[in-house]
Length: 302
Image 1 (cartoon, rainbow, N blue to C red):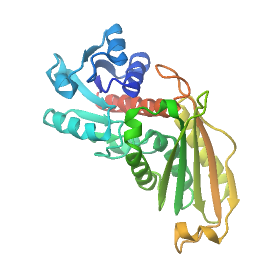
Image 2: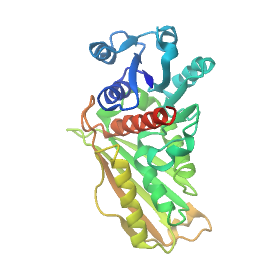
Image 3: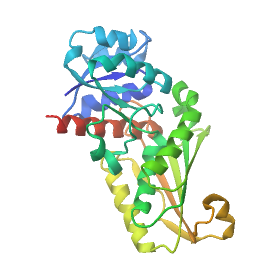
Image 4: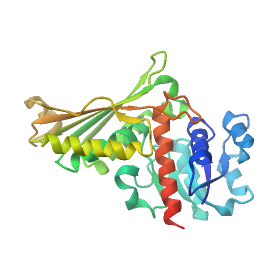
């Protein structure tokens, strides 16, 4: 399936490089930007990929547009809404890497198969892709009345799109923790870490549960981490799963629901450095997950 990427910044360019290097069922057809001098467009031209700096209108006007079966949008939440409207008359399928959340949330290791026919799927956020699989792993074996995630990323890996969408990040991630992860209530926090040299992405997941089976929860989390690492090689547990008792002070988070323990999971995500530096695991997990979705959609429509 021929695919196009809208957005010639860090995320879009890294996704293009992944399609070129790793694509089995997808073929890179076009990279779309708005800055004719962007490094992404220049790199695309060097790899023989068609380009336009006229945005989505330029994509529609490109020769061969009718042959493109899937478009990845790596712009911003506001831009995706406009791009989706522009492409709707053509029936073009979309994989949205912004927090716009116009279509169903998709986390490949959790719910990809349920949304293969959706016209516009949303990749949640980098923090969501890293942590929601763990919440889903815990909720698959015991109810999770409350889950909270903290995503810490290198400040240098947060571009203008990420910084402009901080509110959307927290709201979208929290919503997906509930709807995809299975938590009764979700909360998301993002930290832009200014440390030098830049640190790789770190994610912390807290789940409140009642009377947990420690072995069952640990095994479920470890299996899920293995599933995610199959398409994000730098994704790993930083330390063993921790399950510790809690006191009554957590009632403000769960209301009248009974909880007895906190499950704590500490993750690290190192990037594959296809285009971005290895510390930008937050961007790498988004592009890796998006490629996984694109590959499966292409495979399912053959």
